[in-house]
Length: 497
Image 1 (cartoon, rainbow, N blue to C red):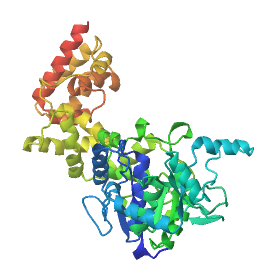
Image 2 (cartoon, helix red, strand yellow):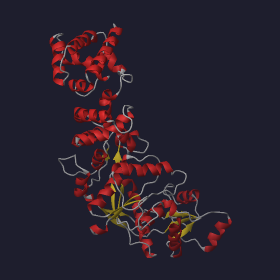
Image 3 (cartoon, one colour):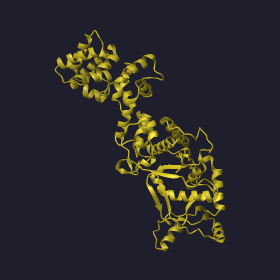
C-alpha cells in the first residue's frame, strides 16, 4: 500500500442524468479516504459519450459536490498538474497510448463478428453466449488484408495474460480470476476512437491514482484493468495497478440495486425536501461503514478522522428513508438557532412568504419562532411549512382543505366562539395568558378534551393540523391577526351548519 502522503483517489462520473445517492456515496468514501490520509481527491469527468452526455448533467455534478461540501483538489474549475480533467479533451493522450500498445504487440486487430463468434461456440459444443473466444489473436497479415478487402472494420483488443489474476481488495480480501475466464476485450474501434475500458484505466495511470474505491458491480472488470495496467507499464505508462476497494451495492426495495430511475435515488430530491448536507452525508456514510457500533450521528470531520476503508462492509446496504430522516433530524437539532434560521430562509422563500433577504421584522420573527420548530422538524421544508402562517399576510392566508374538513365543521362553532370570547377579554397577550384563557374557556368551560378543544383553534390560526406550539404561535402572530383568523374560522364553521 502507498504511504499516506502518496494517496490519490478519484471520483469520475459520466455527466448523464441527475446525480444519485449511490454515486454520491462513492464520492464521499473516496473523499473521506483522501482526507483521512492527507491525500488528493481528483474529480474527473468521463464525457466521451456524446449521445448521452449533457451540459446540464455536468453542471449538476458540480452543483451536487459544492452543495455537499465535497471539495476537490484537482479537476474542473480547479485545475491541476494532470489536466485536462474532462475525457472529451484528452483524445490525443488516448491515441498515443493505443499507438504504443499496438507497436508493442499488446493489442491486436480483431475482425470477428458477434454472429461468427457465436457460430464457432456452437460448432465446438460450447455455450453460444460465452462471448469472444480470442480467435483473432493469431491472424496473419494476409487474413487481415482479406477482411479489409471485404470492407470489414476491426476493433482493437488487449491480449489477456494466460494466467490467474489475483489482487487484494481492501474490503473483500484476496480475489482471484482464473486463467481463461476473462477473454481479450475491446479497447478501441478500428478508427482508433477509444472506449471506456481504455480511457478509464489510462486516465488513472496518467493521473497517478493509487486507490480506486468503486461499486462492487465493477468488480468483474478488475482483472481486465489489472492486465491493462501491466501492459501500460511495459510501454512506459504509469506505475502498475492501483489498490482496489469494491464498495457494497446500495439497494432499494426488494434488495435490488438502487438505480438512477428510482425516485428515491435522486440526490436533489433530498435537497428540495430540505435535508441538510451534513445529515444526508452522515446517512450515506452508514451505507456500508460505521464510526462505532453504538453511534450513528457524527460530523464530516469526525468521519474523516475515523474513516478506514478496510472497515467497510462487503454486504449490500439498503437505503432506508426513515433512517435517513432520523439522522437528518438529529443534525437539525444540533444546529445553532441562528444557523437553523439562516438555512430555513430559502425554503420560506420557496413557500412564497419571504422574498430574498428577510426584512428586519421578518428576521426578528424568524429568530423568535425557530425554537418552536427546530425540535419538531425532520427536514427544512417541515420547518418552513410550520412557520409559513406567521409570515403570510392575511390576503395570502389559507386553511388546508383537509384540515378544515376535519376541524372546522359544525362542532367547531361553540369552540371558536368560546375561544374568541375568552381571548378578547385578555389584557396581556402572552403565551401564558393565552394558555390560561383557552384552557379556562374550552377545557373547563366546555368540558372538552384538549385535542377536541385546541384542534379547531390551531387550524383556524395556522391553517394546518401540525404547527408550532399553539400558545407561543399565537403570541408571535399577535392579537389582531390571531383574533381575525379565529373569527374567519368561526364564520367558516358556521357556514357548514
